[in-house]
Length: 104
Image 1: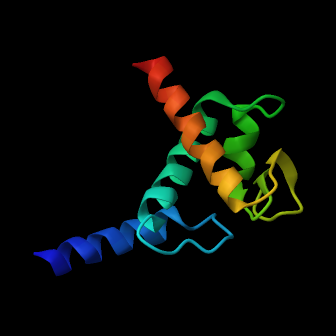
Image 2: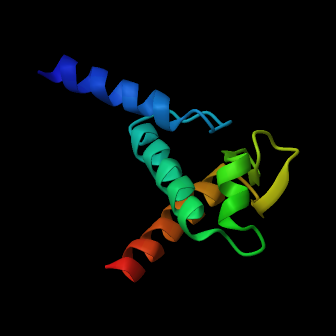
């Protein structure tokens, strides 16, 4: 039972982590990978500031050490910049929570 759950979580983690270019480890890696996927889905639905949802859908997004970008590497158009990975992940979680509160 536990092995099956772990296997399922690992498969979901690999899927969620496809556009994350930072190392996620420890007890919260599944949580943060899921939050990044949720953030991507929110941006595809609502866009973000100066970047339209059509651009997000067309080019995708990626998560890097100091930025979230519209495209598949850190040299693509910035969506938002950060001082470090923790700040970026905190922003992602907060943004998702704000969207959840707005929709509910």
